[in-house]
Image (tube, rainbow, N blue to C red; front, top):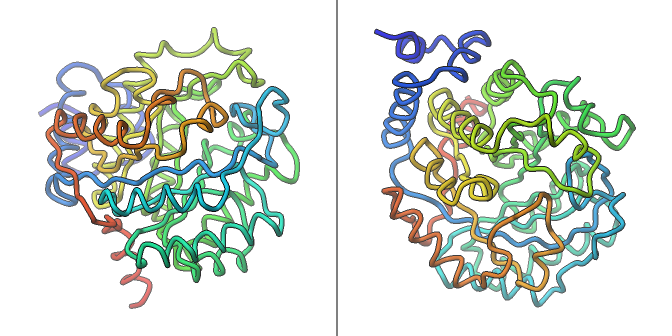
Length: 364
């Protein structure tokens, strides 16, 4: 019996053992992937859930060191979709059987923005008969705003932290009041308090990052009782401060493999959460998302943003599918999922089983 098998069978998931599992090669690495797929089939099944992605706006109040749409990047042409463009995209997702939407935006809290999102949520719910599951990803907001958006139709919320080690967090964000590590965590707690299916995520292969940091990220997901996770490889962007460290990064192949390993280990540790096969994985490997599906992921996010806006939402370089219309993206992902041995769960919201279990535990 090898060490990886012993650790996983006995569920000995402390930091040291997770660092070991993140480092193994050969047969032990393959065992991790095999076990992750077995657990996925047993606890969440072979279904893959679509989340139609709408990149609503690239206007952002934050100035994160890794992000191409950071406030300080003066070379980005800023935009936001008008109401009808959002509603048409949502209607496409509804009619095509996606089951869910993700509306993503640069982070802001101003009154116009909050009102606009509320209005859009109400109109999407009305136009689609409240049949679409709606995830928002718009950063830190007040409890009042979260409750307002939930009442208007949002069910899930994703707020990525990118690094759960405080020291690493402050190396990739400005050290000021609007980039507070503690506020980020408080927002996650607030989402759980207000009844959202709560998601977060990290980047893998960041400058200054170690396997110890990644082990702590996995433990954080578990300890915080997270319902949904989106994580993938860090990919540099020339118009960001972190670009100066590009020569110190892991090779792209290693960054991808480490990302797939994180997906597999999370599936093993948190058996019934939703895990996304992220677009960044495909950026590093044409089959990156398929590899994630085979290693435990069960969510894909086809981009349904109107094509003319997509170059404005480059969080990182070489983002794929910039010129694919929504219908083309759908066909491509269908093929990818079947190639990975999965089956698309048409017309299903795909709420994470973990959320229902967490809610029951809180009610008892």
